[in-house]
Length: 198
Image (cartoon, rainbow, N blue to C red; front, top):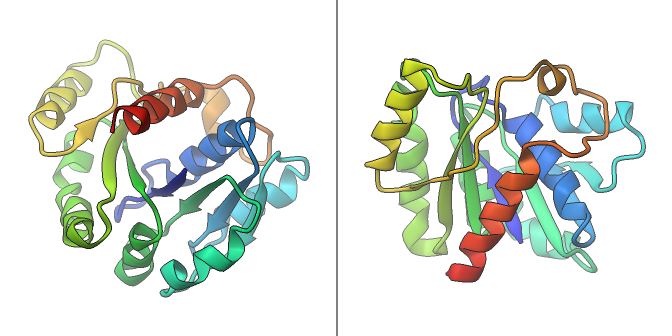
């Protein structure tokens, strides 16, 4: 499986999502996490948590789709953590994968800023056939905004995952740790079910 974690808006949980999904995938086969964000947050995370079960490399380049195959010898899965705002890197990451995960908190502001990301993915989709999934992150159960955002997204042209990531202190403070038994396990299970169904 090749996944890109994408949102042109910052602060949506891309790095946390990338680390947790790569860790969960590592239990299913050798996994490479590519940090394509020039800020290098995933790479820094891996330096703090030296025993992550996946390999992590920094590759914030605009021709990632051309380089990826040469990096995947013996690798079963790849996850790409993308930067906010850098359309060229994000476009290249989308071209390199078969699925895109768009993490976003369930706020009206994040919903408003989602369109540029979906447009960029849609521009690439005819060429790549990439599947797109929206993942709600930092969800407070039972809130009106959460229900409203979910209702709006369920009417959109992309697949909204049923699994969601709750707002938890343990996730907010997990930088530099090795994730275990997190809500991302259910996210990965749902992604794999979609992949089998396709």
